[in-house]
Image 1 (cartoon, rainbow, N blue to C red):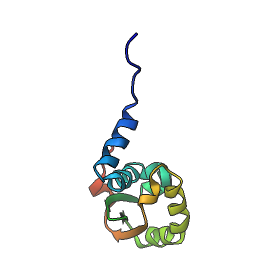
Image 2 (cartoon, one colour):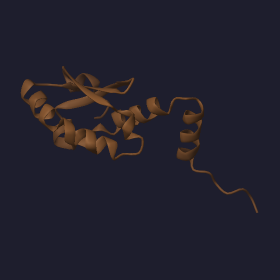
Image 3 (tube, rainbow, N blue to C red):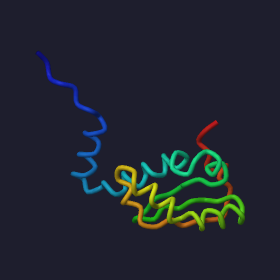
Length: 106
């Protein structure tokens, strides 16, 4: 009988925690899950582009979308905090710009 397989996610979690990098790792997971968090319609108009020291930076294409997101910040943070490691995000900063400049999807 051989060894039981080990889940890669669990190994990564233990590794980043042992290196003292868990908050950075969790913050960047939120960046990559932005579309899932805010939904595809909203994600077409904004994109999470950076995570540093608890701050999630989101670029927003138009003032009207920025205002919409500002009204939803508490709800968005609640969704983020419900994700594993989401408490690494303590603040969201909205910045004007084009989400397409950061588009990594087709």
